[in-house]
Image (cartoon, rainbow, N blue to C red; front, side, top):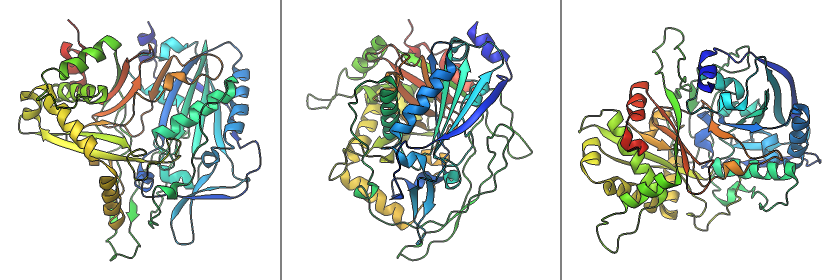
Length: 484
């Protein structure tokens, strides 16, 4: 019944009832934090969107009040999220905070229809879920004029939907969930076990990179979402020889199911987004299968991430019906905190991730045992040590490039999250979330977000975006779903 409700409706008939801003409870004064090489490539990505559903009592106003009060407290330490992106006199991007800035944007909304949490926590994403998350189609670069964190709280029949949009040029997934955990801890009154955020980004990289990025004209729709058609003019103004100006046109966020392309431009691909739930038993089966018959006794066993990744990579390759000679790329954004020399603290606040790639022919990937794909992934991850991180940074600094989705690779499977993030522990005082998923920003064919399963243990939720034909074949693939 829930699926029918969501898919039947063209819109949620959502009504905005209020908009406000939340600042740190105490005065902090002027603060400036340079954006470093790990942050800058994401300026032309879109805000990172997360959507959490909670069941709760009918006191929506009371829940909102508690969330705002807790937010004003947690922002004392996480005050960067209450600031904006700016530039210093040399043109180097930075995060700026001052007490007179707006702070975090909070939107309150209600849905006209009687729609409950169960109606919206379905496996397949639909375009109406986009209404529950702010800043769809908004570039991180727009953080020069917008809040760096926007939150929409929508009243449901039996709870609330919390849609969050984080500026990805300012923080990665590890920092996002550290913030969410600290906020929830304050709201629930539980004793804090999280360390304070480590705010000095220059300890990770202290190279000043100057970028000349022009912000596009943005036409806002009635709901506040943007439809950018940006051309980003980029040039490196460092000591090296001047680089030519690059005209980069980042892809707009891909539309989700049933969304039609607009205008007479090249039609955007229609994509489907769906969450596949792998139980603890399924995860253990995948891991044990891939770890059978290792090449030698000295071979390092494959991790849960490596075995699940190769399982998905192989089955998606089959679902895409690639030719044997077609290349396919596996991409993962790795956390560099512990890989650096010296290592950075887990509480480092900012982006400390890099994309690593491994490529092979689809025919080779499928003809070989699953250990072959797992070995490619394992070697790529293990090779990304402190030296590799430093070389990647130097390469980018000598010729900066603003990332585009296509940079993930041809016929790619790309992982942008981790099941280590304890997303189902985010309890603000009315219980754990019923469902956690990402929004439509930064989605493309082959993009994956991994979350721990709500059932706990070693279960994992796989949020996958694919073209419709490939998704339909994957849904019918018993080997992917581990059905008998």
